Length: 141
Image (cartoon, rainbow, N blue to C red; front, side, top):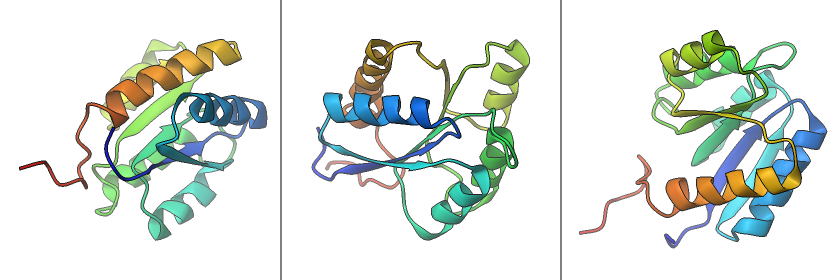
């Protein structure tokens, strides 16, 4: 794993799903600090003032939904290349297509159990933390 603790912003209006995500990541890795925000407007404000390494984004939220937040993230120079992973309950192919068209880096369905969330967190950590280079992280020489 890389040296610095990474920061994940979870944007989801469902407090139970958010707790499953937080619990799963705390079970899987100590190298990730997880912050939960329940709505898109608050998440946009948070992203304008704080640097995160990843965003885990639900698209179905009241008010500013995930698609609108994703558009905002991609049009802001500060967050334009921030890895955004959509984690949602929607299996609608149009949502999948639109998420990628708006700049999502991945699209996954919300698991139905804590075990499923752990498997998701393990896969996330293996790829995004252990393997992938982050746009803001210097590459080794």
